[in-house]
Length: 480
Length: 99
Figure 1 (cartoon, rainbow over the protein chains, first blue to last red):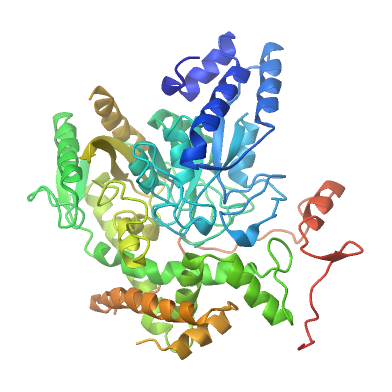
Figure 2: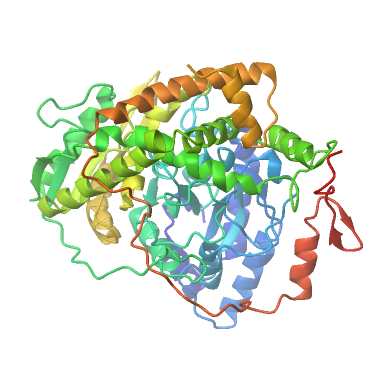
């Protein structure tokens, strides 16, 4: 197994079936890579000791003649905000220190049922709040392509684990770009499924009307395999639902002019190398016979502003459960109120506190109509924009991020500049549509090639369209 | 401009103790973000309803029964989380005592 780099889920399965692949060896390989690279990269918060034992069990089972299930023996890295029964889960926050998950999240239960192995849990921005993994209470994760740079966030640890061969695949969560942006920064594939396609049960909630769990992988095929396992209705999340039967055919591809001007070949504030690669992707798809059309999402320019009302509002209510009473950190105080406020002061990091205060502000008496109600109306209009545009075209193509990976520390002093990183990804969460980031080309910077991501956006429950166009980009990218 | 008094009030509502310097920094951060959010005023929302749910919502009913018996392992896992306990019960400060 000298090339775990070119392994796919299908190859793992075939290897197990034919007896050519030993999971002990495969898992040891990943554990070796983690030992070698992770002290520097800090992708993992914990590596699970039982992973190897699990691999042995599967090897034995297969030897006895069991046929491999859909994800048999596939080594996964799991974001620290997705619960695995009996394992610590902390959302990279001090306030959850000492907490052990008492049940499996639905996504984990489904992976487990299909034979997945969990290697460990990965670092992220605290409670998934951030775009760089610098907001973790346990130190930043580094980008394997350039250690001076961030891997993106909030699912930075998961993206790095996959990019640096420290796991075959990973799960992340995406509230405003937290799967797609780190995937773009690290040169891997990241899928944010349709809102409701994957159950949120067991995902530590940040903003419940926006959060989705999704896979981070090396290739589209693996993404599809994992998505097919984790998707579907679950009784524990009443917003989850089954996919409707859509036609998956793609003929027309739209480029929203608010994200990228085909005429000018770019956009103000968009990195030049990214612009060049978006044009290349468009040319490639044109050659393949797709019709490319400039379209408009007129309200999308207001998405980030609406997001920074809706998201903190939901954060302030979701995070009120962390009060030091039942689990995690508890500070001492002179009375109950004092215990609450000291626990929350010491347990939450600066960004979590910032968003709780902001959310409390926009929901407080007298401001509701001016902020929250207005933002929800704008959200309605943004959703309408997507409904309208998908009457004209079958899929949308945009950059995933305005810039390639930035330097560690570059944006930490200015929260607003960090928030602007998510300008292309946030509208997708507000509308609830699915989107994928596919690696396509590179931006040369200071002697290093930094990965670029192309974002594809499809109508609700039509992830298949993302995969079909994603494959074309993937093949071309591999040829370079 | 957001005053320090307003931040104090918000911190109290959110049950978070803040230091003086944190109050000052948060007032500035909030001001910046709220400044950015101002642009929402440009949008004509007169015809738009509030989007209160991300998906179409309808009532979903189920019997009010526990999905499964809570077993001993669950109990150990759950009570093991308690920051403080007495005779197997979760211990907290008195709710009605002010001191």
